[in-house]
Length: 258
Image (cartoon, rainbow, N blue to C red; front, side, top):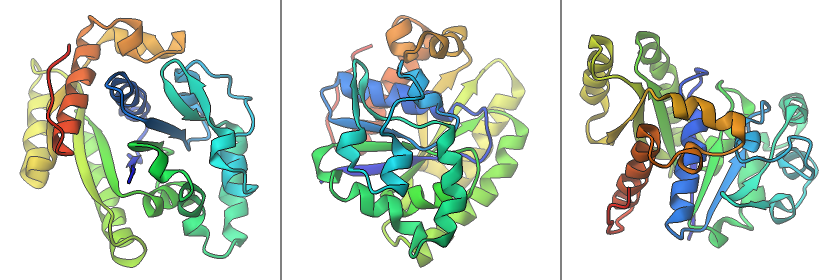
């Protein structure tokens, strides 16, 4: 059975989409059947895989029009993708009037879950109805955490939301792990954030840290993950290493390949 993982952080600019793109592609390179579902109206995962945001059908059609997710899936050279664009913003209003609105995405993905090893959902940078749908559909939550002070403040709300969803709506939901992004070991702040995160979440914090790297920032403008853009860069090597650590946590034996 496939595993659905929501990649969530209500704070923008923390490396959420970058993590979605590169972890998905790294697992694709490993021969895993992976689907990246863009559920952010900004559509950055869509353009990050080199796909035009105007592509239809897309995740809006899946959620609001009952479109089969398979029909909305695009096979790219980086892996499978269900695209998104600004049209998805309308779903926030339209979902309010639907019965069991929290479970629309879960029902939609039921038909394709077993066809993939992993389905990653790139959530909006907020804790609203689209994110709630993703949390109800997911088996686990992966949280990218930027190494800065305010990132720690926002984690409290996220943790409380996940706990509430687990208690009331999705009893299987758990934390997959926390990924430190934009990490710079030369700064005291990065080290302090790492210490605090480990204090609260222990072994759920990935040992792999994603460094600040200009190649990581450049890659999206070329419509590709940084692993494809410059595989020898520090950012690429970190994401390839994260993929190995991720698979090890799933119980799969790994060989280093970076």
